[in-house]
Length: 292
Image (cartoon, rainbow, N blue to C red; front, side, top):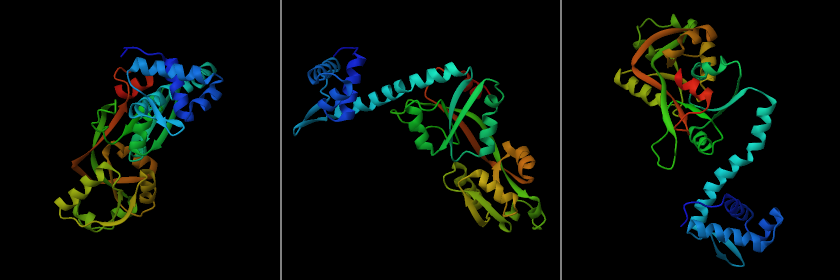
């Protein structure tokens, strides 16, 4: 097996695999079938593995072929973005960064973590919110520059990504002003009387909060569970209930929602991570996030 192979041959293989036949690939590439076939055979020879096998009157991918296709998808999907990226760069001197934001990450925390970018006069931020696993897949395909999440990437040898802790904060309980006077008990016993709003189980901190209730003998009156943290805070601000959040955002909660601190829960910490695909960081805005 050769230590190098021709990327043009890999491209021909990729087109054949995508089209499902040599003839359709030849038509798409406007080349002779014999030429396409010969180029694919050259790739197989250099790699040392068969990539296609006979299947009826056509061909099908071998196991090695499926693996090669997966890698080729990553290579050429990035390559297809090159003209667009160059056009965008030529139109504007701004530095673009595409950030994936886990849907379990509180919105106010996201804003604080992205503050170095927001202060950068030449930054062009594109933020995509989504499920954690979906964002990891996009990062692996280089569709994202960085992910912000409330958990590190899992230990998986097939995932070539790097997690770095950005911040941590102790948890506190917050309340709208109208509920502060509705209990005569001290904190945390008052949480057995007041209506409670909680994040759903998708949040890593939810399990810790449930365990904290059990440890302190509190049976919470849960009146709402929210996947979207901003929606939870909006309902809380209307007087629906009290809720837990990181002390990290205490000032923002008061200024944005008029919500006050009810009590501290120092046994529980919430962690925030940046996940990237590059070991050596080249992107200046990714560097700015990590340095903060």
